[in-house]
Amino acid sequence: MEQPLLSEEKRSEIEENERLSSYQYVGRTGSVIPTASLAGMDVSIEEIRSATSFSTPYPPSIHAPLISSPEPLPNEPAIPNQSPYAADYGPYSNDFQRQLLDEVEIRELLIDHIGHRCCWGSRPARTWKIHAVEDCNVYVGTLETFLEEREVIRETEPYLGGKIDGKDNTPELGIWELDLRSQFPVLFVPYKETRVKIPNSETTEKCSDCAGRGDIPCPTCNADQEPGFYKENQMSQCPACYGRGLIAHRDGSDTICTKCDGKGKIPCATCGSRGLLKCKTCNGSGSLLTRKIAVVKWKTLSTRKVSATSGAASVPDEIFHRAKGVQLCNTQAYQCTPAYFADSFFLNTFSSDVIADRASVPPTARVICERHTISVVPVTRVTMRHRHQSFSFYIVGYSREVYLKDYYPARFCWGLCPCLEWLKV
Image (cartoon, rainbow, N blue to C red; front, side, top):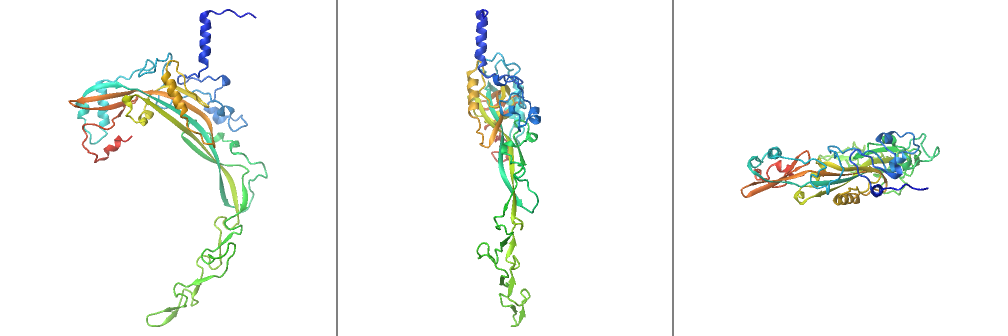
């Protein structure tokens, strides 16, 4: 069958589309990640919670690549338009609006920051000259791995008779065969733990502490006996008369000891000379009931990276992680791969570094899904000068958090008051 001839321009367009389709698409917030093997599948949280039509504990799409619409992270706006990409995603590219600060705003932010420190003066913030304002934006990459971990522990209690939930009825379920859909939390919850009894896992066994007798030899009057043997009616010396049966007085007279009735010996205070004590482990029953408990933990492991210019290198990473920035990508899948930016080798490398530092998964856990984000946080470095003195501070994120590392010229506490604790981030 003859194929229609394509123009040179149309052929180039098709080849370009085929080349780009080999990369993972990194869309803006609200986009869906296209995957060839799972095209058309969208898994929502509602499906995770209420997938009652599946015979397995979770829908197959949970442990397969998870395709859903990534939600923007809290307090983090999304890029309004990501196409075309900037040349290098440099500071304040055309993809997002530059944060402009005038002199009045800068001074107000610094004065407000200083106002929370009881021994700092505001004169430098009000009067010193603003010498330089420098943009030194920071890129923050995160990879969140949401996993489910299951392990088995044993619980033991005295067996006092009655029916047990053993293997006689039906086979015992495996740890990963338990249906816990009703307990499944919201994706990427920091931590949740639940405990569930494994059906058909109860067994009875002989108490090892008392060898199934229900009693143990008294450790006071039978301490030197062989295991499993004891003696009854063991008596101990009366501590009041020291075995004499009489109490001596200063006038030389003696009276009968009232503690031992003149016998000089008294029964064992621990067991009453019975020689045995009830076993506390089995409560005297001689048998123990053991059951298996599944401890299920859902948690999110986070890998974070910061790429800062030399101008912002002195700011701790924690400041950038909690700052409000702009999302450049937000992808969610069973296992995230490095994001692809058409015209930014730096961001491609940075995303690869974040993915390469993926947190290790314990052998008792399974990965549910992952979320990979890259954000740019606007950072402004301000230098103020007066004569031959100067100091610098940073305005971080769209929340405009002020960070002042060490030196401020109007501090009067000399380290003798708690206000210095504010500096520890």
